[in-house]
Amino acid sequence: MTIAIPSTGRYTLANANVPAAVMGEPNSGALRLVDIDIADGMITSIAPARGGPADATRIELDRGLVLPAFVDMHTHLDKGHIWPRKQNPDGTWLGALMAVGEDRQANWAASDVERRMDFALRCAWAHGSAAIRTHIDSAPPQHEISWDILESMQARWAGRIELQAVALIGPDDILNADNLRAVATRTKAAKGLLGGSTGVHPDNPAIMRALLEMAGSLDLDVDLHIDETGDPAADALQCLADAVIETGFAGKVTAGHCCAIAIQPEPTAMATIERVARAGIAVVSLPICNMYLQDRRNIEGVRTPRWRGVTLLNELKAAGVSVAMASDNTRDPFYAYGDLDGFEVLREGARILHFDHPQSEAFGWVRSVSADPATIGGFSYSGTISAGGPAELVLFRARNWTELMARPQTDRTILRRGAPIDTALPDYRELDDLMG
Image 1 (tube, one colour):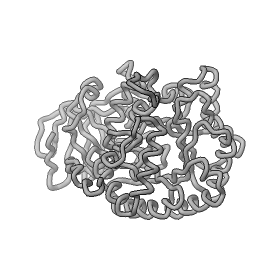
Image 2 (cartoon, one colour):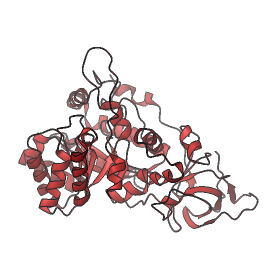
Image 3 (cartoon, helix red, strand yellow):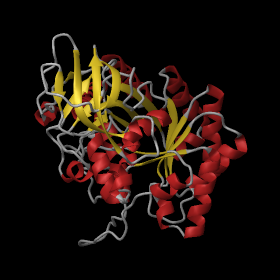
Image 4 (cartoon, helix red, strand yellow):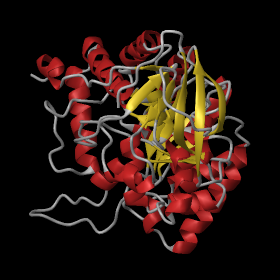
């Protein structure tokens, strides 16, 4: 789709199909056929399509769908694109953890991290993302390198991608008071969030309390990797909810993955979901990465997975929990593929999580990669389409749900502040000299 923007900067996107869910009707699955008036990068009005011939200032979309630019609130920009030099030996979560640790120790100098992060952000930009939250591996001494790079990326991408970051550390560092404080202090200086990762662990209650106490003392919000495992004994999500309720933690709390509740007994899972709702914890599902990684077994020969690896996102949402979907890893040992494409997350999420029927209602889920993560993350970008807001839009030729989801939509048009951007993706060859 080619759009020529008038030199005056004033034009109308005519006969646009827009999900009501991103125009002030969050619980609606309907599409609204509207005209969107734009001037100087801002949406000046949205009104029912009024008809009339196309001209230099009236761009006919012929019922093509228009979505807000995407919000990808769980990524790993610092890990991205290391697959050519460090693959996962067996496809398992543990294999990924060990491989990344080896690569980090051997290669994650500032110049390496900076170039890969910038490459990943250019991919996200070309696909239509306006806001991203990345987790940053922060086990000392890596926090002294990667957070400096993160701050430089925030400055470099200001005005294009709103970039947040979370310190990612493991249980041992959370329980080590000196390491936890060092990481939390650096995170505070960068206006980041405090996070970590834990699943099956005997000290989960202590881990959660230590993390929340440190976050509370420094007025930091929290975003954790929780129960990223197929072990039904995992109880980190329940322990997190209990700790939030019992401590009265006042900051925002987000839990990513939460895979294990999908294979726990129904009463156990539902009781945990009730606690999560009561604690006000938001949950982010990573459907593509979780389906790739979960239920792989380090055994001889080939084995078909028995479950999809994803959390109970529909049940969480039905219980009143704020939910979102996100990309997670890209071309690293945790996920060999991916390109930080918010639409791919929506498209594959529909297949994996089964939120796509009845289709007349399913468009409300477009909020899970736009308005809802924008709210959960506290981004300044709202992930909505509204009069008075910026024209941060993704335009498709597809006219309805089935046309949209049937294809990758590589011919989409991205408008940022009302102007079309170059959607050419960076060439992987740019990184060849880093791959050894």
